[in-house]
Length: 112
Length: 114
Image (cartoon, rainbow over all chains, first blue to last red; front, side, top):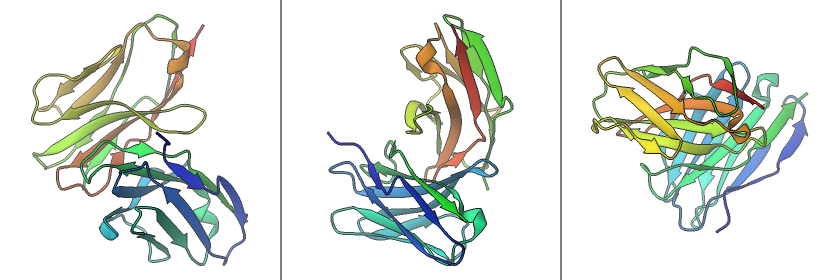
């Protein structure tokens, strides 16, 4: 069974640009959540989607957004990039909202 | 808001030794779950062990076990017979029953020396 797949794995952007990250959950999983990992702040919850609806949201500015498609694949978007957005963005999927999380390898974003 | 504290930024032990990683948390919730996640150098986070707050019995998974002290809000991870492959960052995490995302501690970098 394929695991959680995140694309792209690495990307470099400049300040002011926007970026879209993609996450394909494990087949059959309906919940997808996103986390930001930085050396300074550690792991922080961004948002969670279940059946195409955002169920929970962390404490991030509106520049961070996401969506989930009918096949449970999810995308997150960051607009007007700032240097502080440089991070590893992790996606996790689970069967349902309270289920065990399975993480992808992450997308490493560098903002110059 | 919930907080999770891991007081040991780094630990190093010899192979085959037993090591205990500490975690304390703060919450006013009564229904919650606690986790230990392992993040090896390849970066993919995997679940090590899970504990439901309503269960008094400590969770065990092979060489991994927890000491869950609900009143003290403490949730330590014990790794027995440590192996080189246990070298990784270990994160303690909390989620309340209503599920609003995991709250992670800052992590403990565990190094198993040969």
